[in-house]
Length: 417
Image (cartoon, rainbow, N blue to C red; front, side, top):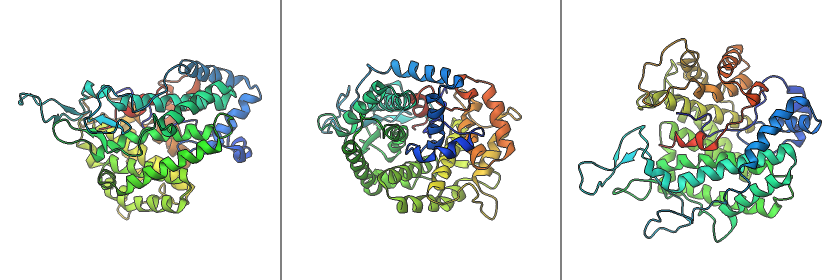
């Protein structure tokens, strides 16, 4: 596995160095959800002031964005494999862990091989969705940080093409996410793939002062997400995913909360986060921090970290609606901190992971949850663990306190089953 951040829950993170600066520019902070708007605004101020430490960061951001300027735009209507009777504006993806049945003459119905990715899945809309998400985030970030309108203009075009233009827009549903050949035309589990909307909405926040993104664009996009929320809350697939008792359920809550905040419904977002205390934390985490539903997977380390990423992301979102998930603890000790503490010795190399992990074991899976914990819990243990883990693979961005993933595709594609 080569992913850095799954869902997410991307951007620039204020670790410990800039609290005063961040507070000073908070009023000018972009409206983002998966990362710190104050940290972003502080970083841009440093760049605008010509601070030398920012030069390599701006160079890296430009380098990424320059390579994306002529790629796309992207749309669900440009399908390699349209499904008969399915609107081409509907998103369609193939279940990644399902393969042709060797005991069937035509290979149908496909059968599950957990953790083994069928390369056929690359031929459907998931790959296009990944590229769209990656491009919007990186272009919008480059435009925000450098002030170069070329990047913002391109990000805005990609957004209009995917969400707004009648000829190319995606319908606001995932009725056909992760379909299984020979068995169904879509499943609730496919909703995990719309985690890719999370960095997209942060990209939208970075465009809020760009001349390339209008109030009409913003209104139309919010209306799209209102329609998607209605589908998420009422459709059979959405209802099934909301009842999931593993990482799928947690990420459903992260998505639901983010989209509700994006459209301005803080009261509904608060209800989702409050319910997560018992629905997610108490139900998924054992008193010793184990998450049994993730440990049954063939890539149990990756999925344990993936669920903690979702839980810590949801906890950060909770701070926006005055719900404290970080401190929540059941009488017998089930908590986000317990889950982190269970995983920490394995990430630090103090213990060997004893459960199934058929893909590459990567201790950096825990980087993002540690960053969030270091900021929100201010526990020296997490700050020190984060420092040690980052030192193993430090680059220009991470050494300056940034957490900018190299690829949004990596963030999602390995954890969408």
